[in-house]
Length: 147
Image 1: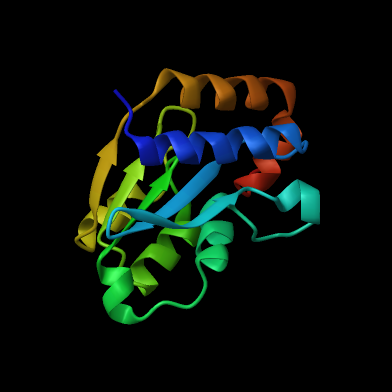
Image 2: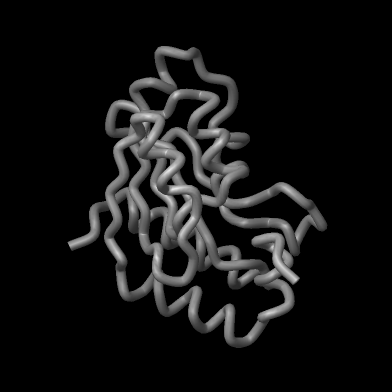
């Protein structure tokens, strides 16, 4: 069973899909409380960098280094190099991933730097991405920096 925090990340992914965006969502959890929510808004805002994890961190606001070190990032899709870089920069110790079948991000980079990863491969996360990629291959490739 998926935990309540991943459920919230999935709701963020669904929100992005409803807005016409790429269906990826994330939440940042500190001391068992959600302090930031975000979803991919590259399409909606014409942004080159507004992935779900980055939007989530932005919405969480400034945190102290100690708070980041006690936090967990939940994301519906394996984080790319950019988002993994933010995890490493702020020393977020755990990333919980909804799925890594549609896209395998920089998980090895995270592991090599001591980040604990947990992958659910939740069927809802897989389906929402599979459907999006099939319907929007050009936008998807743009999001992950491919031709």
